[in-house]
Image (cartoon, rainbow, N blue to C red; front, side, top):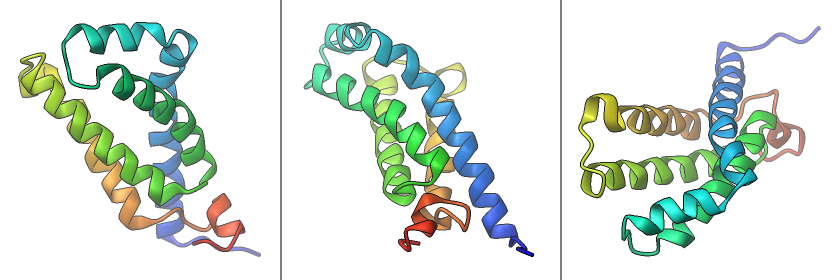
Length: 132
């Protein structure tokens, strides 16, 4: 019989939840990658097309990776960096306020940071491969 630690359960729930959230954000973008590229380029953000493409790929494939626990800590750190960049973008380029603006980006960054420190847990591909 296998018993799970609270940490393993927390890692599983956190990975699946955050992965599903990012996958839900990435799916529409990956279906029509020209839209996010056009939007970000239109704001004049330096390197807008490259950032939009990279973030689209990260949200879609990174979401899947988190759900299955593959390279989970690396993906979580990449999500922290993405959410930091989108927070700066929202505040400086879009002039959004914290509430009803970029608070969700900050929450996602914090959630991803917790997963980066927590690790993928026992129920992950990383653990199965002996990487965690």
